[in-house]
Image 1 (tube, rainbow, N blue to C red):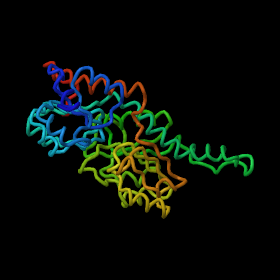
Image 2 (cartoon, rainbow, N blue to C red):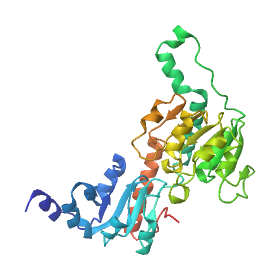
Image 3 (cartoon, helix red, strand yellow):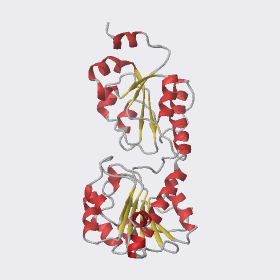
Length: 325
């Protein structure tokens, strides 16, 4: 018996086996390891060992950017629950899970404030050229060349929001504090808001100065923001994306920036994360963030509590805290 076999022979059979499919925040990982028998990305690191433990796996825990497809679910005959450490779950095969009666949970609401904060922060940063101004100052150009180039005013500007769910509404409320004129697009208009509704992203883009994208990812919204929307946004318009990288057609955005079709962009998410096209990094009118919208200690703790709490509730025979509808 080798070391690995000995380790698993001595495992605590009272602890359900859980497969972790992402590099999780250490606080969450520690909580999981205290309560469950955790197999950290074994399906990627050692297929032989994974094949041996797969029949015992009863839970999955991963991040919002993890991919859990039908093929992985099919390899886990004892799987009972999938817990997502994040609000997005577009890379999880819900159809395959539901076909087997496997509930999927996520961590909504607790990250709304931080994502909304960063969304508006990116808008202000790209409009007021805050990152560029710091570079200008640090390079000594203020002293040698005079004031930095003029920026764009935010207060009173027109903001269009693509997707008006929890986070979209939180962004709108923050924008109201800046006296911004707010409009939005969704599949159907909301009866509980007074903001003007537009039937499409193209129609909305044509009427605003800033286009904020905060709609769910997935096939239904893939490349929703493409060449036509960017052309409608125009030479004085800015794109901000805090949704999913897949919602924006990256090549169309690069082309629009190269040709001066839009004024600039601020992005927290990308199509092929964590890889960011060199073209995007070369633009002076683009602000980039490493998918950090929910990356505060307070919010990540709340997300960890929910992700862990859903697993613990399931295996304790209690109602799930935040099941995906």
